[in-house]
Image (cartoon, rainbow, N blue to C red):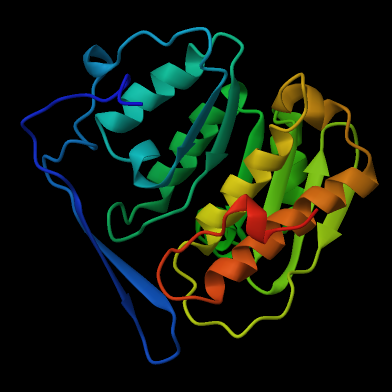
Amino acid sequence: STRYSVATDRPTTISLVGLDTAGVPAYQFYDTGSADTGLTAADLPPLAPEVTGLHFGSYSIAVAPVADTLAGLAAGRGGRFVSVDPNIRPTVEPDMEVWRARLDGLLPHTDLVKISAEDLGLIRPGLGREAFAADLLGRGVQLVVVTDGDAPAHAWTASGLHGSATPPKVVVIDTVGAGDTFQAALLARLLRGPDGPKAAIAALDRVELEAILSYAARASALTCSRRGADLPRAAELSD
């Protein structure tokens, strides 16, 4: 649906991805005066009741005016589920204090935070994943997930659960899109419940928490096994 699309004369951001000899991606964005970074509150149409969730991440939460616009949208969420993945892009905003402040501003309105270990090291250097999770849970976040490449992903809930899941071993072709895949699969699993993701998180036990992490980790591994940000379809994944 294009219902919430915003027409503008501003140019489209150009995003370039390159791989080094080890296959590690590097990103470059050309976004000065672009349509996405220039989004203002006046551009946003009212959200209909059927919009029950909002997801925020990457440089759109760090670069004004769009960052201010999305912060306002989160603050006025009206009970909607909110998830955040900082997905830090230092080539767009190199100042980590900006990223920290922007994330801190979103936390009072956020239910789920997913972050990679690499991004955690950038935004909170020296802070362990358990301490990071405890900090966010203490501020009202209901579920915190930390991913770490082919190492186990860990999750903590406000109810006191901790779970982990190890991704399956694959021949890595391209890691571009791995984090987005994990996030999408995580949300897809939480949305299966009849009462929405907030209720799904509240009802989790450790077995189900680790099943969700495993599902997301397997989806992410599939993306890494093929070239390009080629996310798997649900039919490619088993529960």
